[in-house]
Image (cartoon, rainbow over all chains, first blue to last red; front, side):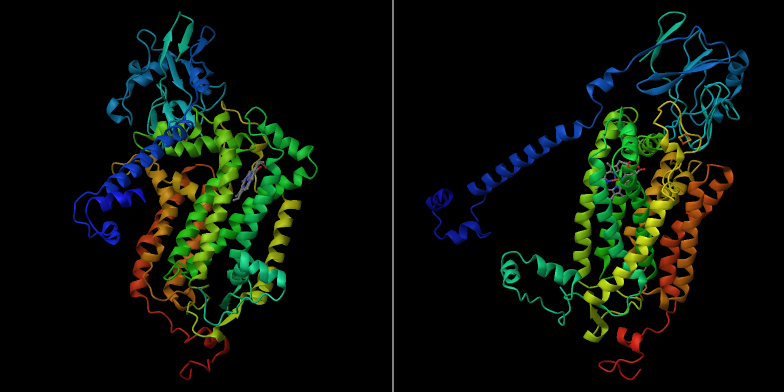
Length: 197
Length: 424
Ligand code: HEM
Ligand code: FES
């Protein structure tokens, strides 16, 4: 065979010696070829994983559904609506002055995920509380945005799945959820229209 | 691989001789579940559940493949296609009920099989590998059943998928991207349904592969038995066929009666009415619970309501839930008592029954709404669950004085063993 001929040409005599650990010449050509071949195969194998893994991620059409416009003109103070953003519910809530002052009264140090209502709303529009309707525990839709639903003991939202309670700034106050309801990226495109995403 | 006195396969028909030379498949079957496999003569009915689990797997594969011929894995039509199976497909109602109740039957059988292992310490050397493969099968079964339950795309399917994949979002840093990667979106939708169907079709065959390894590993030391004393001589064993094929056949008959009772008279008893409402991403059902076979683990998940040390409550619940099963992997090294069978371990036996009660209590709480009293009971029961495996078992193993063991299986059965026992 070709590589045997090469090794023989390099001066050693018996083929048994070339294959064994007995060869003390340092690196042989065959070692180089072995390492190079295995490395190439390894890198190639790993490269194959890239498409296999990334095909699982959200596809282009799913990502493209990423903005929603909502007309808020019909929402009276104290009312809320559920809209859909990325196939998930969004709560748009028009807070009453009482609800706002209740949210402002809470000392930040007592909160699990400390944030003020002002940080969670747009300047001058503190009454518009816009959050995802997705419980930060395991993703159920909390109650409290719909007509007649229980709002929980802090007057905000209540998740029936495992009992997380949110306050009037949709901040987590009790139960297993670790975070406040997420505030999505949004802007007021006019006084009555909000664009989410 | 087997005892020296195992019978040898001798095909008499020329065709079988020819086959044996080219592909010794009949020989393999003969040595695995035929007369060529010597089995302890004293196995009780607890030893029926391995074969029954195999029957359940076959049942799920046959009914599943047939359902897949009529089912459409698209979020727009999946719910309707299941209703089409129920109403229009010939015998469709029966096949679907057989599959849905087959999953429950499978879990009943496997839970008994696992608790048989707990009581008789079947996980102890030389059978650790059989045990490890068994726990792996159980994990795969849970994944398969979870994804199967998503397929009809009802309310419970959808919210089950959301909550269970939500578990992954508890992992720090990578959690949310990981959840989105698993779902192929921000919430369960068509992408998730499709991949769940693909995996639900695949995993049972992976399970079948691991089952083959499980039985392969079993045939090296051979089956254990109710005394936990290893086989010594030929008089301790009988050939699998006809003795245990007959006993397993009888057990299968009893199983079939119970299964058919569920299938034909109570087909929805274990299901949830909300799953006959099509998935609605904007409204969570008031009381979401998983299928009954996940309840004990679900109770452990919900038991963590406050942050623990530095770990947030949500992550803690998820870790505890997975650990509840992973701890089984370490069982061969946690229970260090040299005596296997619970019959000869008076103290261990008491704790075994306490564990059974504890798991039933967890199961009850897991199926109940998330009210304070159930959460409190779950917390106590979950603590005890981990204490049992991590603290009680090692301590019992070191302080317990086991009852005297019989010299051999033969002696345990006949009261004397002429061949080997020094006068009993
Ligand atoms: C380990 C074995 C299996 C288990 C534990 C299992 C479990 C389940 C469960 C719990 C459901 C939901 C039933 C319902 O509520 O309707 C289901 C549905 C389904 N499974 Fe399986 N399954 C297994 C094997 C298979 C196999 C091998 C296939 C196909 C090759 C399959 C195909 C289906 C299909 C098409 C559905 C949707 C129809 C329906 O909902 O009834 N399954 N499975
Ligand atoms: S999902 Fe809301 S409390 Fe668990």
